[in-house]
Amino acid sequence: MPAKPSKSKFEKLLELIKQEKHNLALRELGKVKKKITIVKKLDIDYRIEDKEKFMQVIVPSEGRYLLWLIVKKDRKIMHRFYLKQSSKKRKGNSEYNVISWRIPAELRGSKIRLRVCRLEE
Image (cartoon, rainbow, N blue to C red; front, side, top):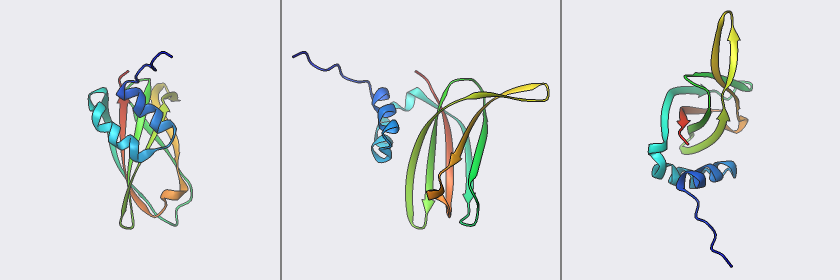
């Protein structure tokens, strides 16, 4: 039986994110720092009385992005990762590349640090 080809560390990170294994993805993130570039940093206060929050962030170019949320809720710190594809949005005569997503309700009542990272494949 032939040996299974080994996955690159970058592919392993993407697979862990798709499987929603956030703690394991955090470990792998340190191994692939050269392949990601932080594009934006945002701090969000998601209060408990807020309804659903939808976010749109303007990004410099088209492509795939990694959303890295560092969440401080009560005394716990959680990391969440999401993969998103940018899309075009027109406003007036201008066209922007944006990423849109809904912040999960489980994160209500927390402070969120968002890092938007460009994936270099």
